[in-house]
Amino acid sequence: MGRCKFSKDCMIGWLRDNALLLLTLIGVIVGFVLAIAIKPANPSDEVIMWINLPGELFMRALLCAVLPIIVSSIITAVASLDLKTNTKMSALSFAYMVLIIILAVVLGLVLALSIKPGNSFSEASSDETQSSSIQYYETQDVFADLFRNLITNNIVQACVQRVYTEYDLVQSTSTNNVTNKTEIDIEVLSKSVSYSSGTNYLGILIFSMAFGLAMSVEPEHTTVMLQFFNAMKIIIFKILTVVLWTLPIATTSLIAGALLKVDDLLDVMVSLGLFSATVIVGLLIHTFFTIPLVYFIWTRKNPFVILMKSARSSIVVMVIRSSIGAMPEMFKSCERIGMHEKIYDFVVPLSVNFKKDGSAVFIAISCVWLAQTEGITLDAGQIVTIGIMASALSMCLPGIPSTSLVSIATIASSAGIPYKNIGVLIAMEWLLDAMRGGVNGASYVINTAIVDDKMASEMRLVDEMHATEKDWKDTDGASIAMSDDVIDEKNLAVATENTVL
Image (cartoon, rainbow, N blue to C red; front, side, top):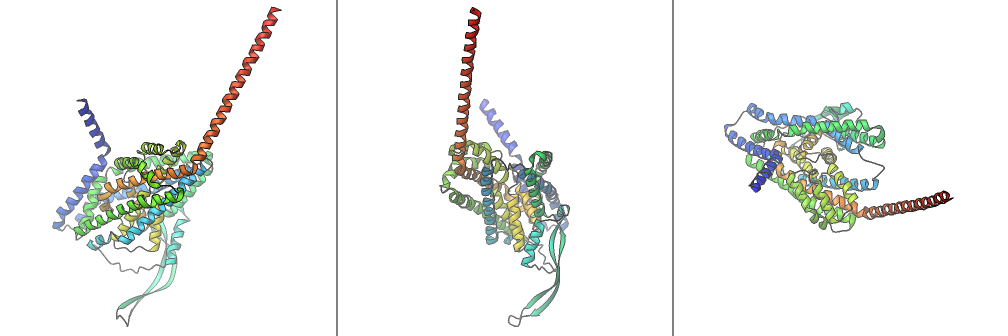
């Protein structure tokens, strides 16, 4: 009886811990079934709008939380760094974090732009419209706008507007005598710097980093401000947690709404399958090539020994879908490998709170996929924006499930990419979230192993010096105690002689 009761309690606990995942999977199934059932009736645009409305409200709630999350997370993360102590350990950790995340984002962008997983979805869309406006950008202006947005002149304005170059154009047509085809000629009369609606996340991100860095220089005078932003982060995460519990309903709404807008559901399934395959290939390349290569170049040691010994912690991350919850297992993996305790006690929590390179691969591919589903050809400025935003946001994602969706919507908005098809991504989120969590877990241990390789001997030398100092203090204490005993004995002898006299 006791065993059955124990099994029942375990099952109830597992269902409670994975309730959101299970409900989201049900929402995925209901979304597909609803779309297939309603599609033959050719629903009107108004019907599709109402079906899609719950998902739209969910996305609006996520975007509402994005700005305070970015500001509070980045400021508290940067301000919490101790620049005076653990400097070398922090520098090595952050050097690896930045490098591996940039490589992950580049890998994701290259795969998505090469494989083009969203093209079949775009071809299947029934609401494609050709814009009558002239789309014209000069490469130099694309990068100039990028730099203007990086350094904002008004942080309040950056919350609602971003900079772009506006052209005064004249369009004319001519006939090519060789091909006998009509060509469009565009002449630029003038250009000026203007503003468009939308949040300038790049400028806010750079300002938040500078703000947090300035706080870290004077920690004794900025404690109250740090507590304020920590409190803001806690509050927003609580709100976001409540919002995420509406994900199952939003999933049904977004998937059904997206599928009802396309003519060929088979092409959508092909696109989704190709997207998932692209992400999985990216994660495998990153795990078994990029991460080991960086470790080998840095240490000249076999990286697969570390990966094998840390496999258990990666599996735990995949199962519980939380990097924070798997930290004790990561500590055990580091201990089994033989790392210095002070090093993994410092580097593992630092990595978990800052680095999500598995998520970086997924986010980069997702943003390009969203653009491809809309038939948008990304220019150099948009690709650079996606790269910078994906790299930066991958370093401040909380270690809880499905927070990458918030970053995808943020980056898409910043790069001018519609994100209405993001609901289709949720169909595979349960699998891809677990897989990229496993990649993150392996990368955390590799990061710790690199720091350990460079600093373990130094840390052991420091430990020996501290042990020696302790021994000297113990010896001095014993000598002083012995001297005190001798003095006490002499005083006792003198007192005895005086008594006899």
